[in-house]
Length: 439
Image (tube, rainbow, N blue to C red):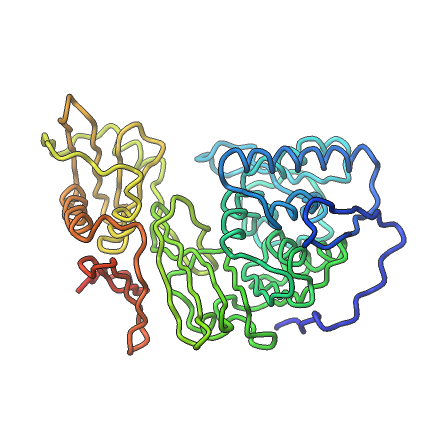
């Protein structure tokens, strides 16, 4: 069941126990926002943690001057995420073990503030549980089912979105409400809709955003279908990976509008960023950009992974070994890796290995490559797939197409999509069945 949009409702009177904070560094930003009253040392510690997080993002090149920076400096993350999980078990340890920290507990406060402002993803929901009213403490087994994305990814994408005051924004995949809060800060909450498939996530976001005196429309539903009741939108931001560009979201994009979303396959290793823009004449132009990081897969979109046992097998097992004068592609050749992922799907890279290591979990094929001298490499492969040959085949086509990192997305007359290099020499169909058909 979908919640009724409340963006047109009259804002409720501010609670009497709110502290007013003023934003001075950006004249285009809202002048004030409200924070629930907390002990002075709590708010000062949180403000210092936010400033340090923003400084790290700036130093790493993920954040520059502008309204997104102002929002991240101003918005208190401990209000949006008053509880969060920290993992106490090793990555491959089963069953996993988490602790739910609570900002209202003094013993948790320092660790939680560090977690919220580390820049890493923040886990906020375990096994689809209700988020409000939880008892903090340990959880064993199960899985994390909602989180706030890494701040370097979020800040970079929100800047690319180019939010402006007065825009209508559809935030798809509410999570902890961080991107919705930034949109409210920059654009004003009356034009913001945040949409999530999980009613517990929606309910919590509504309460936490309201604590900041923001009242966007909070809607429960399938994010890939959008929310027509408040469209069309000037900006659409999808905070989970999709297999296909949802046609419904394209149709809800206003003239002059822009939509951003991670577009991927069953592999998490080589994401693409789809940038869709509707021109003033109503036509749609879209790009697929090879990027280093992307969002996690959304509901119902399973990703492949390399198990600990398979990683150990690849690292130590014997296979067919050959010497090669051909260098493995650089990590920075992101367009090549993106094309490989679509043309030869089912591959997952072990980025934690010392050498280039790639496996195909579904058929147990694998490959590892290590340097053995100047311009010499030792390539070891195993299984029915020759992954090294697949890489070299795509590398040749990628170089012939001009070594692009950006591909044009073409909307076919039959409703399908194709990605193509600028000269058209390298192209493939963006299909949900991952056939890898490029012809």
